[in-house]
Length: 176
Image 1 (spheres, helix red, strand yellow):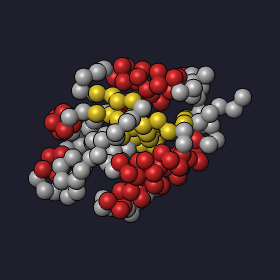
Image 2: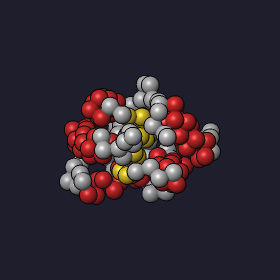
Image 3: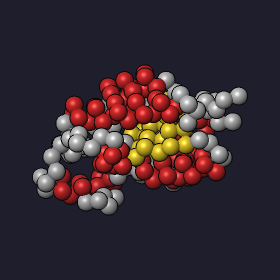
């Protein structure tokens, strides 16, 4: 029986913990020999979507392109882990509709917590006016209305977040 692929889309503010959860989840899935690819928003922006800015239109196009790659991989039995802010609900729903096998994970941490974790100094620069249209500061983040999983990274440990996602994948029949 062919392995069923799935896109696991982690969305949330910068600093919420998307990449951290993605890395830990990827490790768990690799240990069980699942075919896997990780599409990290920062890496994608320097390769696949280089040249796109941060207007709503460019952000939507960025997500559309990530979604296109996810669709190709997912339909070939690959688990695709996406770690991208993807701030707008409508484009996330559009991508979900095209992929089908899609699990949305809302990596939820309050803005104040994300700012405290700001290892890249982006929030500080945005607050100083050096970065315009920064999600959560002067550009909106639209949280998912009905994500399959919500990880409250300000309240739960990393293992708990990863296990919630694995449990949901199992419930939905993606794990063997």
